[in-house]
Image (cartoon, rainbow over all chains, first blue to last red; front, side, top):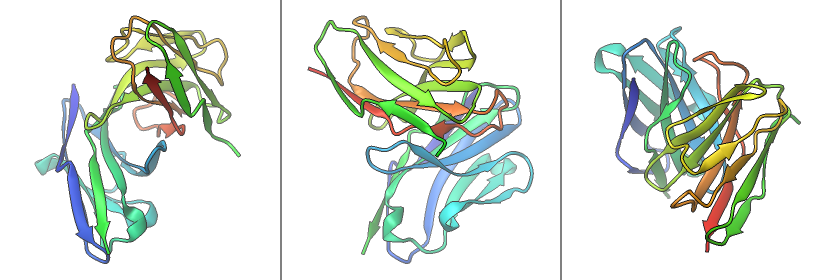
Length: 113
Length: 114
């Protein structure tokens, strides 16, 4: 069984500041991890995914995430926030051999000018 | 352009009525999925299909039905048995059944029961 916990339903940062969105997972098998972004009233778009290659994964729009097995974490970061980053972000896990993606509850990111 | 289309974007239904949400993909993907999104609850899987003429229940299938008669189409029917159908519905597809396959999402349909 797999599960995902996203710490903080709302995160607010200033434009130009570091973005850090937290994701912890639980999986009984080696996990594959995904970050998606959702803009208002739209579908989800893949930012990046970890599939057991490099532990530091780079995605679109300068986002990156690091898989840390010892901490069961896959936190999403971006060095400098932009106003266009305001959206909801979802972390998801799929386990080796599993067929269902399990999503966290989402984190709404607000960017202050 | 390849992608997933969902229609309609907004849908209103009276209590007691069945309604069907459309999902079409031209990505030549084998697998398709339906999710329900409610505020603060993330996405929950309703049904998924790995191949034509086959589908499986997800975590919250009660009150919903699907069909997969064509590879590119996976319509979802919300029946009158669904107690609280007002939600945002998202369709997705992936190339295959591998756990590493990326799911690509449509723009969603917002269903409101009046």
